[in-house]
Image 1 (cartoon, helix red, strand yellow):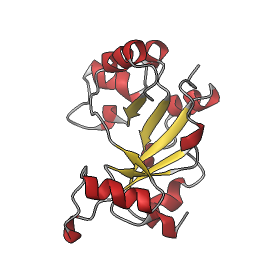
Image 2 (spheres, one colour; image 1 turned 90 degrees about the vertical axis):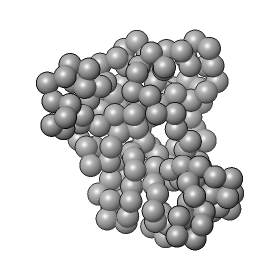
Image 3 (cartoon, one colour; image 1 turned 30 degrees about the vertical axis):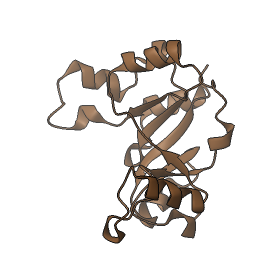
Image 4 (spheres, rainbow, N blue to C red; image 1 turned 180 degrees about the horizontal axis):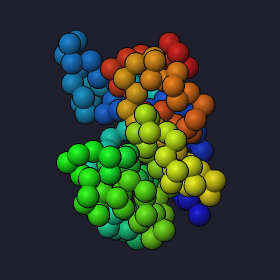
Length: 159
């Protein structure tokens, strides 16, 4: 149900969020230089289109089925600015996934125990955590996700 297109090349991978950037060294995120740096370290690269509208997933499913489509989620509902707004309840619990059928779910690392995320895992969903910023965050989630999206540290020292 969740496994098209083939995601096997990404399983177990460390994925450089917006490339392997280093702003202090003059290598900005989403630049050719940071993409090259990620390739040199054998990291996959995440270049996201941030859109929380589930209709975007439906558009890609219909018009570009070869593109891996991920659903970004976290516990929006618990944030004060989103609490009480039905859309964020729906997004927190990924209730649109019945229709959108994402190829993977990228969930905020600190919310790894979300009930809906665990139900999706039981149904065979591939999962990624985002965005790990240091070794302590990696240690907290290591082994709990299929893919690990990181930035701001060299994850290869720990995986």
